[in-house]
Amino acid sequence: MSVRNAVVLAGLLWAAPLVAQRERVTLEVAVNAATALQQGPTITTANLLADANTRELLRNGFATRIHFRLELWRKGGVFDDRSDQAEWEILVQQDPTTHMYSAVRRQNNQVTESFGESATVTTAEAQFDRPFRATVHPNRSGRYYYNITVDVQTLTETDLDALQQWLRGPTAPQKSNPITAVRSGVGRLFSRMLGGGKQVYQERSGVFEVP
Image 1: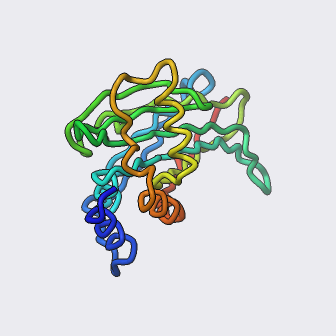
Image 2: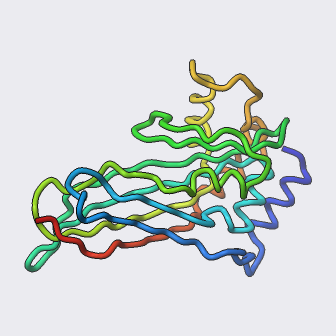
């Protein structure tokens, strides 16, 4: 990583106040009560990468992880019970040689969907903003609701190692390593520092009844 990029990142880390997001983040959990026993809800997002700092870090070679945790809760008399949950993540990165952005969906440490390459962060995000069908759903009658938590975080050095291992795997795309820029000296230092900060968003569905 160049000294110029290091200075840019330092400014992002210590600037006060931080630059506000350009667009409001939205999460939607849509449930079809009529089919709730057979299929999970659809998750729709928007503007998860709208934060100016996140975009600048992506342009400077830092990958971003968007982690989703969906919980299914069953209404009780006094306390609600968590019936099930599912987790998955989106990894977004820029190739430093082509300057193209790529994104993949991972679940249980396996890549389940690749969204290809995009010229901008906005078009990359549009690929995974589309409705996604989760697999969690009730298996008995009752009154339920879903709660989703989304964390948007610049990857730590450990996360970058895991991503690099995937890129070297048998299904890795044949192209230059997009995280080379952060594997040396200053890049390693900043990736550790940035790993401590993240944006957290939550949304809850309405209560629905399964007969």
